[in-house]
Every structure is written in C-alpha cells, then in structure tokens.
Length: 122
Image: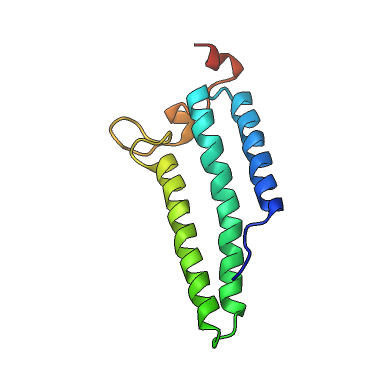
C-alpha cells in the first residue's frame, strides 16, 4: 500500500487554508464565501498532491504486484471522488462562482471578491 497522506501534507493543507482565509479577507470576500472557499481550495490543492503521488506509484509499481496496483486504483478513485465533491461545491450550480440562474461568471463579476476591505461591511 502506498502512503500518500503524511503529516506534512496535512500541515500544508491547514496552513494553506489559513492563508486563503487571510487573502479572501484582504480582498473583501464575505464570511460565508470565505468559509466555503478556504476549505474547498485547500483540500483541492492537497488532494491534487496526493493524486500525483498515487499516479506516480501506479506507474512505478511492478506489473505483477496486482494487489498493490488494485489498492492504488481504489485510492485514485476515492481521491477523484473527493476532488469532485470540492470542485462541485465551488463550481456547481450553488457554488460561489455561479449566479442564481446557474451561469458561470468570473469571480469579480459574481462578487466573490469585493472592491476592498470596506465591501465586507455592507
């Protein structure tokens, strides 16, 4: 079995989430979007690292080690499902990058990023 999640990756994910929160606050993003985006964006980042490690392991595992290969493929499937859930949360019909009608817009046009710190004080 491939160990693709380590303490350092978990620590990186937490630090990244905090950095995203600070950046979104700096840009005037509202609190609801900050909470949603910080968790989703940091998890997508961490899961993409884990995904890369799994693909690398899949490509370097001996072809006759079927148990390990099957385990890696299962982990890839679970990881892709995890990515899908976060991407859907951000880009789905109710995500912060959509308007009520469902159309996709650029972040500034949707109001994800305000016009400055004062925009949070509505």
